[in-house]
Length: 190
Image (cartoon, rainbow, N blue to C red; front, side, top):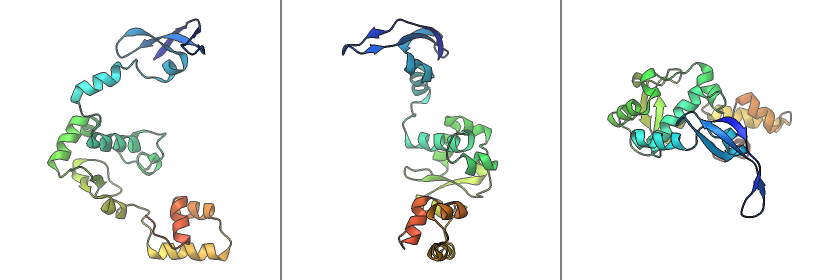
């Protein structure tokens, strides 16, 4: 939303002073009065969420979450997984940029609740010929950084030399702190 003008501050029911402002909502094309901080970070006055729910009514389904997560990994530069997906050149086919075609393909190709989307070729794109649905366990086996016993033993050997910290091993092997810690302590890792 775009700030139009600041309004005089006023007290709420607890006597706390709050700053209000008028904002322009690009989605419903009208002026809206909001708390100054909220209006600056909101994308709409609430009409956008209502419109999205009316469009297909599935914004809160698990399949919608799968679709949103896929898009975030590939398209959102600020997503923590972007470097492993969009940052490596992985793309989403144009058809799947809309939810309904993705939903229809998923339901016709084995999606059931609890399954995850999987790229058959780990270097390939998100598209119908390269995707299927698998369990979490199967999906974890397909990752580029799958930890083998050889890698785990190498991590333990380097740790035992005393020349490496856990943070250094995390960077060297591109693994999470918890995985490094679990490997060093002989626990189960993912």
